[in-house]
Length: 300
Image (cartoon, rainbow, N blue to C red; front, side, top):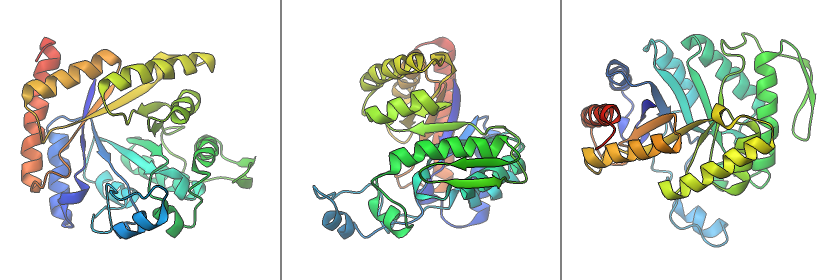
């Protein structure tokens, strides 16, 4: 099982040197990947209470929360890292133009020598969709078509495609990515998402309440994959856990539980705990040491 770190968007700050030091410390510690959350815009919390039914009064992020733009950040990190996989965990795909995402992702993949993993999902922030001129209500169906278009743009020198949301007539991107295609992972836990994962995804971020829920959901995804003629063993699964709470025994037990459920990747998050960049690094190092040892001996 590969181990990774969630980039602490909320606390990392704006100093490029601090960002560099954090990411290079992650790579130097032997982590396999860096996972980055995505938001383009934040909104005043009043917008959620006024604009949704029932009122959405407790958004996880608001106008006060800082988020570095993921592709720009990855371009910066491409020159600062050598082997660390860079993963969006997740990019809110349906609020973006598909061809532009294909171009940006291909550029990052080229600059990193094939180290991009594109995690995508639908998102929850209807105000963000509104500001970006995208339709919140058709986002699921649009994302399915987007994934098809992305893969074609990454693998075919010239693409002709006509769908509900895309009309491409003998066009292509240059340079094309190193990975053809770039791996696409899908995040979410709703039943429609599980079916989309089974049909289309290289991997899955199971955003569920508990590992008990995850076990049942994984079995359903595997069943849907068999129905679609796909091998369930081909699906990557990235689980997550908090490194800023709990203790080493709890960290190890969670890692072992996810490994037994079939997870291929496990990320640790310290975001939202109010830590300094150096404290984030220290906690991550303790988490990795405990989890590595626990996975080797097979018990907390």
